[in-house]
Image (cartoon, rainbow, N blue to C red; front, side, top):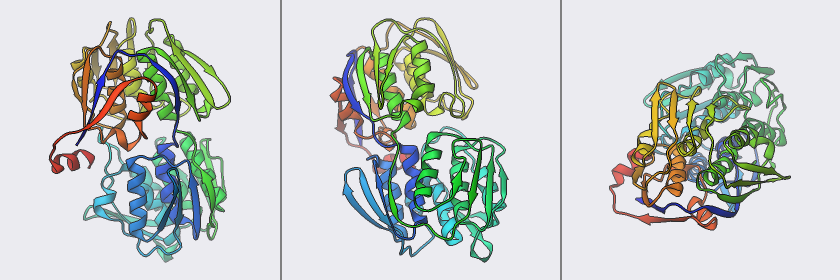
Length: 432
């Protein structure tokens, strides 16, 4: 098992290069199954979720060729199965995108129930609603989701999502790309990675309009062809490094980003007294004075992202005054708060609201990540804390952050990764 050892209390200085977006990559890679030919995907993040996605595609019969560290070529012309490995699919939440991709191209899919981070009920009922509206029969049996289209091909339809769901929007969009006729998805989510998936599919021959708005229109096509595509930069990774310098002080240049995607995060940091200078594809982030309180409520894009809630809460634990953080997207996403309390944070959680009373400083402690973004929040707290912190269960963090230890060391942080004895069963339990 791996742990991070952090000696806190150092401000961050330097430059950090942002990797490709995790939330886009874990949908675009399954979408490559729909392409009858070879597609070249660039700016692929080197994270464990991507590694799992590629392994699943290989198991299904795709040919994967690594061009360089961030570029892969995927040839799905010889897919031999539409049934995923149970052991692989259960380790990653994004495995549900395989349903839309396989169902859309082959008219059938058997995908193990997804795993990944567990921070509350994350139903896929809206995904199923979309598939059934498109003419699929969907049943859950033996730990697998079985989906099949009558006569082997879905039929276009009008679909209204009862709640704004990023996963359902992307999954239904994939399924509808090769359906007969036209599909309209209403009350669709608008996140940047939804637009990125649509752009990828369109570059391969799909006909999708309206991605990034609440109404997406799709005209079905008979096949997708090969091509090249580069994944957008990771909004949440960039926001995490911005939050880190907000907590520790210092100045960093965040490179390879789309500043417009960062507006919802930048606005809150500026309210807290952080200086942010926007350039063409970089942000200069500086914090020299005291952090100020603010209130944060997570909302679908373009609101403040739920995937930045733990990180901003970690920063607010060091701000002057009392802040309110309201989680309106997921239930039970405050499990990390007990770990921050071990470090001296003063936070009280009441249902979906956290009352954060800023403290003068945090103190290093042994702490444990409970999910991906919670793990990032603990890294931020450890960087700012007085003394040494030992962070365990870091496999959660490595699901979504490429080279986080090396990138932070490049900014002057005193952080190292160490291997420690541990039971294999314990590791698998946390991953699953």
